[in-house]
Image (cartoon, rainbow, N blue to C red; front, side):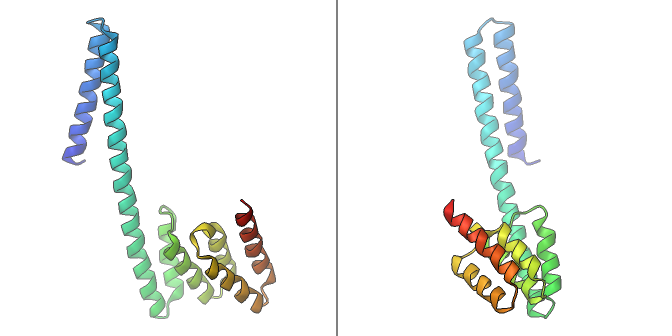
Length: 160
């Protein structure tokens, strides 16, 4: 726990104690309410800071995993790249570039169902031109069922 986190927790505790004392012992509910409001404000600010730190850590972890996966793919080990990104995906949501890379890695491993599954899950993050190219490629490879599923999802997304 960082120093600022300890200070924030101490301030929250002090506000809560002050509110309890003002309401209980001194009979000043208005002042007690003010201290409760201060404690809530501190708590929400602290939660926001923690959320931002967690998001930054997730993005850094995702960037490292993406670089490792690209390195594996460049070395001809696309399956290892898939494994790296899938491990990260368990607890870190993919961004657009990571989703696109995972789709490409699945496709290069001839696991088209995996590629389509990732595309369907991350459709809003993907470039529409990339999705159109993917549908065209699936149709050219005689994977009409996968192409139809992706085309249907695109149609639904446009309608919403």
